[in-house]
Figure 1 (cartoon, rainbow, N blue to C red):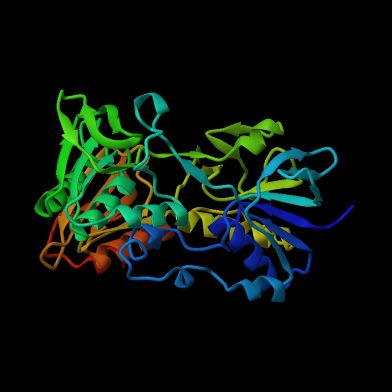
Figure 2 (cartoon, rainbow, N blue to C red):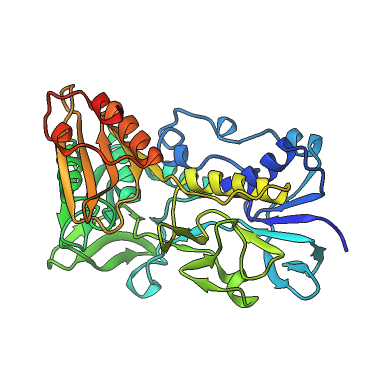
Amino acid sequence: MTDRLVIVGAGQAGFALAARLRALNDTRPITLVGAEEVHPYQRPPLSKKYLLGEMTFDRLTYRPAEWYAEHEVEVRLSTFVEEIDRTARRIRMQDGSFIDYHTLALTTGAAPRQLPDAIGGDLDGVHVMRSKRDADELAAEMRPGRRLLVIGGGYIGLEAAAVARHLGVEVTLIEMADRILARVASAETADLIRAVHLQHGVSIREKTGLVRLIGKDGRVCGAELSDGSVIDVDFAIVGIGVTPNDRLARESGLDVGNGVIVDAFGRTSDPAIVAAGDCTLLPWNGHHIRLESVQNAVDQAEAIAAVLAGGDIPYDPKPWFWSDQYDVKLQIAGFNLGYDETVVRPGMREGSISIWYFGEGRFLAVDAINDAKAYVTGKKLLDAGIEPDRRVLIDPAADLKQLLL
């Protein structure tokens, strides 16, 4: 039996796992399998600096191609895994060939939800934003004066709207929920972000869904909305969430929920298979959650690498996220799951503010808008398990440093 580690998925988690093992002087054979035609790269800048033309793709790649050969990491790109044979410990590739493994790592990520073909999802000019190819296709669409429909008021849709407005595109954003960011942020955070987009000329329609996209000669040209209106559209971006790429795990009989279920060491229900990143359901504070973030993909993969190299420390997620929109930098520390109270605190500089989340009286998370001090303080409190003094939080003149004393 080979001692080979096969990593399925050449994204952030897959690269981090391979790189960390080599940094730990682990010499086992590693094969990294990726569906895209390029080596692993950073995804967040794709929808921002790369799409704006401010960053070339070579600056997004984690390492040049030579690094993989130098570190004896075999890379197979532009290919898919069709099946896992857990009994024989091998995977079957799309071309019918097999790769044997001693340990298998699933770092397959997540895929954007698509619109059904029945309502126009198959029309040309309808895009998602996840990969380099997606960004390249969108870049060709983003021209001044064109009309964009953004479907979905989450961070993906809002960031796309911000880039489009920067490039002179006319933007209408629709959100079928009562407000934007309904699933992931407080009403206070949503109010602030909405106001920024309105100031930049985005037309935001909440409580408004898509009935259908209208096509002409196979390309989108309009949209019928649930409020009864029909608008002209030159292209559309679908930002209605993602689903975990857990097909291989599900079909091979691993325990799967809304993602591949793993323990604190990244192990699946098969001891020979680990998983990391957006495809996983991992334990956190008594729950099993999916953390869709670069930070978690990298941290979880590096924790698994340490275990594979002989360590025994469980992964304890410390969630943090960020979103850049126009001149607004939103930094999030913690995870606001189950919050029932928020405290809004003005920052020391104009335009800065923070929203502090509590659940059953316990501090859960902070949203810091142009307020790095609040973000850093909140993150330190969460990492140390310290409950902030409410008297300091509600006093805008009080120094946040007092919370750490």
